[in-house]
Image 1 (cartoon, one colour):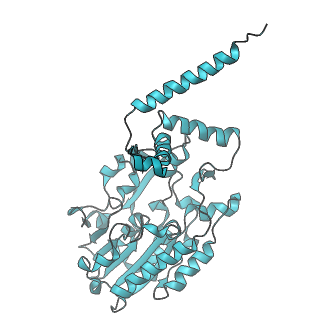
Image 2: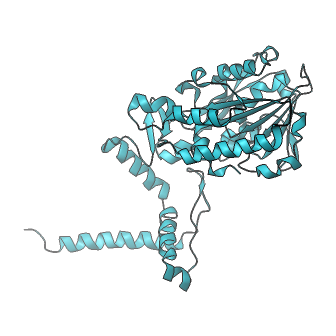
Image 3: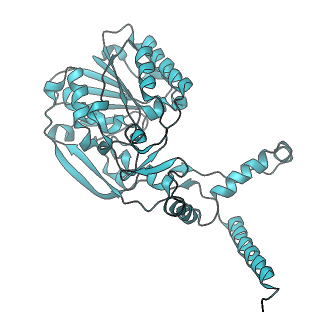
Length: 369
């Protein structure tokens, strides 16, 4: 005989679990950052009459509750495993797994973003470079989705139109096409960035195009960091993926180069081993993103100087060009206003200028200043 109380007991059990989790959520201190997702978490909104009346309090509180839920990472992992392993979905929150790589769907082409990037970079040329004798170069780094989307049936932006738009809008620069020098194997499996030891062909093509190929020895020692590398897509996918390893290339010239960080007034080496234990180990290359860096190579065979406008992909590429220049200045206008550059950089001193940006940045260029 079935008990009439079973449904009631079930409801009470659910209510009890929900009550316990709600109480735990209320008592739990707010986390500032999600280490796995590498982003700041929403904090508890201020309870004011104005916020309540406008409706902003509830919308902010919803984001806060989602971000600060107890055991959030565990529940995220359970959901992701179910999405991919049980329901056989092809993506979860824009992240998918293909050819052993975690990648992010980049779609559609954001034409206004690309045009905005072109406008900002062209403005830099007009203000600081058009009256100099520097040779100007442009290269675009394809993201992982470029190599995976078509093969695995995911929507892709019109990369060809993106590249043509940038080239056409920056016709003052000689374009260096490196897409055919790369493949999906050139990228970390859990991260959007490329692997330094796999981009030698791309670096060589850039060096040859800029006329410094003869000075790049290509004679490197490959070293593997002992720390495991779990990239940005590892946390965003919330899946138990295998770790990557960071390998880097060095030689006597690179080891004797110095890197001046204008933001914190510190001089260090090209590689920062302390960053291997940080939230983002990719910052091991040139100590990560910074508004203004200056690499000095006292053993350079020439006195040529290079200025690079770049995003994070440039951190692991530029060291492979260091042998050919006495000085390389790296500028990241995500962190410094382009209007202020003249206060810190003498552009008349540059022999070569390289603009190198990823398709990810170009399609999401609001961070450029």
